[in-house]
Each structure stands twice: as C-alpha cells, then as structure tokens.
Length: 163
Image (cartoon, rainbow, N blue to C red; front, top):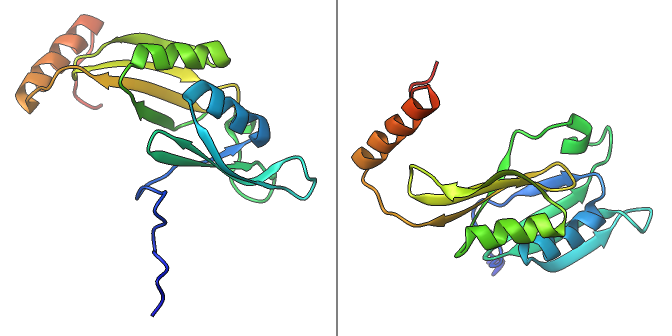
C-alpha cells in the first residue's frame, strides 16, 4: 500500500490555479504584493516562461502557469476580464490592500466596512486577476445580516432579491 497522500500537505482542499500572460513576473509580484513565498518554479520550453509554479500566500498555495494559446484556458489579459475574485482573509485588510496597490495593483474598491461584518476592499493585479481583502470585525446572526443587507440595498436603490 502506498504512503502517498492524495492531497499534499501544503495544499488546501480547494486551491486557485491562475493562467497568466507573464507568469514569471506575476510570481514575483505575488510575493511582493501579497507577502507570498515562492515554493517552486518550473520553466517552460523557452527557459523564461513558467510552465508551472506555486506561491504560498498565508496558509494557501496558488498555482501559476503561463498562458499557452490554443493549449488550455486563456488569461484575463487575453479575455480582457476575469469572472473570478481570489479572496484573502487577513488580520489587516487596509494594510494588505495598500501593500498590493504599492506593488502595482489597481484599487477597484477601497477597504470599507460592509454589511456582512467585514472590512472589505478589492484590487486588480497587473495581469488581470481580481483579488479581495477582508478582515472580519463583527459576528452577525443570519437575521442581523439579512436586515443589514436590506438596509444597504435600500440605500443603494436596490433590493437583495435576484432578478
């Protein structure tokens, strides 16, 4: 019987795998912007691109690969958008948001207190991936959260019901 673990120790059950135009530079950016630690970097056939890499951010590993046109998923740069946000819970959302901006990310939402009990803000990295930062500051019951959501939506002129 094999002693190989089906889920490696350094991975959580769900991990992001980002496809990036400029994956080598992105790995450097993620270590600087998010306090990440590079775990591995496997060069591509050209010796410069990243066929596969891992950056540990907090207790999670983010896998990174270069975009290979015609050979798999496209990067947000190619798509000109992303439908995914990578979320980082941190002890200080404001500091994490600012560190990312200082490293070259673009703020798309400043950190502010949200109706669900978190300080929350968002950025887009130079490679088109969206990231959010949060610090949980208030525990709320489902009823309290529903009431706060309804008040927030009313203030914005909407409601919490899907179309």
